[in-house]
Length: 118
Image (cartoon, rainbow, N blue to C red):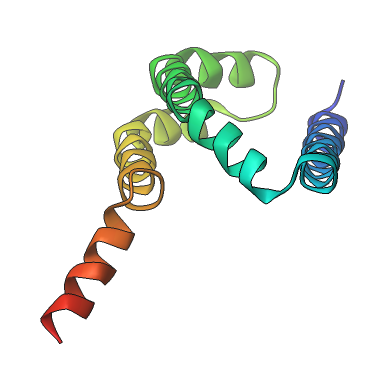
């Protein structure tokens, strides 16, 4: 497989997954109501947190392996591999920052704090 075909395959897989999730959520809302959807999402929060942590750990922990594989397959050259291995911790910090700000409620906490002050 060429890098282009892999990118196309991953894009279609992602889009299919997103459409499937949207259809399932729409069916749950239409059959059981919004309260059931909110209850289900609330119950799944620990599982989803575990999933995000696992994906982040695999991505960051396996980063050198992913880059070596990409180099061996000819997708990137050795200089690009060294550059990408060097930015691993910047990406890790960025992912953790996004997790804290958006998924752990830090942004809503800041907004509520600003509204309470004014």
